[in-house]
Every structure is written in C-alpha cells, then in structure tokens.
Image: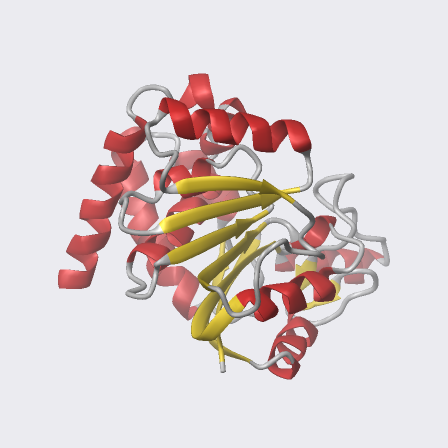
Length: 265
C-alpha cells in the first residue's frame, strides 16, 4: 500500500514538473503520449525508477527529446540522457534550461553501442524502444553492463509481436511485417522466422552477468483495451487492470511490449 502511494505521489509530482508545456517542449513525446499503451509503458518505467532506492545516477540510452528523464521527478538524482543525433541532444539541453533542471539533467552525444561514460559509474540504465533500431543490440547491452555498478538495475523495453499475429503467420504461412519500417527486429517469446526470441535475449543477459528480476508482458488485449481506454473515466481502471495483467499473463501470449527489469550481479 505504501509503495502504491509512493508511485501515485511521484505521478502527481511529474505533472507539476512538466506543467502545461509538454506539447511545446516535447512535440515528439507528446504525440506518443496520446496513445494509451505508449503512455502506459512510460508510466511503468517511471514507476520502476521511482521505487528504486539507488537512483543516484540514471542514464536513459536513446533518450530522444529527454521527456522520460524530465518526467521522473526529483532533484535528488542526476539524470543523464544519451543519443547519437546532435540536434536532439541540443534541444534536450535547452529544455533542461527552460525547466530549471540544468544541474540535474544532462544530455550527451554518443552511441548506445559506445557509451561515453565510465565503468561502473551509474545506478540505473534505461533502454526503452532502442534495441530494435540497432545493428548490434547485444553490444549496446554489454555497454550498459559496463557502466552499471554491481547490484544496480537495467530496464529494457522492447516491441513484441502479438501472439495473434504469430498464430496468423503460422496458419497462413505468411511473413510477419514489423510495426515500423525502422525496426530491424521485434520479439516474441520464442524465435519465429525473423522475429527474435525473448528467451534468447534473456539467455544473453544471463551471460552478461545480469539477473532478470521481472518481465512484464504488456498489451495482450490491446485491440480491445486501447479502444475503450480513450474514454477518460475508464482510463484509470484499464491502467490498474493492465498493470496486474502484465505481471501474470504467460510470456508465450505476447502482447505489444515486453519490459524487462534486470540487476547486474
């Protein structure tokens, strides 16, 4: 109960930090947040960070406009965003000045596969919707492992291929199309043609000295929920329902996102 209250309090603080300027300062993230499951996914990541007692230095790999780091309230930790697009980093640093968070949020130009940070120097690494875009995702995970302190947390969010889509592909013998032409890969519980296996990714995490503590399977009933969640009075109900469902439903019945929480040994 206390933990749930802490998450609710953090959510309220997040809104105070950003105020009414989200659309103005973060046009890219604002467009994403209009969709229920993208908004829910970000909320889950924020709650993991908010409830982590060791959040002294938080790194967001592939930070884009920096919205995620800005929306995690509090000046008691340093948030560092990295991205390889120079213009994005410039705008994120400008946003830090606008929001008076320049001392606590910093954005650096570097690649996820070659992070410009010291060994064992950070407490949390977030890598949300990034691995599917990288030529070498395992190298990016290895870099995250390098910069993390021992017993600290890695949060991965990756796109999943819905089990209904997998079933249809098997039944009709068709090739699965990724949801975005920019994706080099997407994931299912087990490998299916060109779709990568979550089980293989978990095995690689174990090899890289990580202990997987939780996997959330988000959006199994996305076709139904996303439609009704647009009705504001129902949105909160579906958030609570989806949060409970994501922890219990089998990974083999993949939804549209997997969120993996792992700790470096």
